[in-house]
Image (cartoon, rainbow, N blue to C red):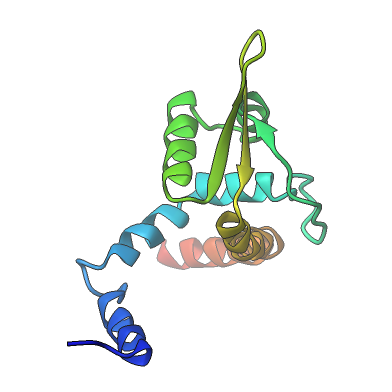
Length: 144
């Protein structure tokens, strides 16, 4: 039996429902909602300046640059996250045979499309942090 393109699209919508526990898109959401993923995508997307309204062109970065930029990330977590993003097709890893070997990471087109979403998430978090902290203080004072 052949299926029309519309039928295949309808079937895909049924198959990829993140509200279902077995849906692979739930695993993807779990991955991309990780703070290190968001920060890596923002860094490679050129948003590492820290200025919330400013964005620059995407750029390739070395592992050591990412490690310095991402304050608090362990070597193990950074390595695992970069490998997972490469596996998912969100970034590419390029090894240049120099002494020592140079390894750079760069967003793919797919990664760049996700970066546009994560940039907004990071900017929102930075620009609304005062309100969140104020709400936390009010909540905690009322709970006492």
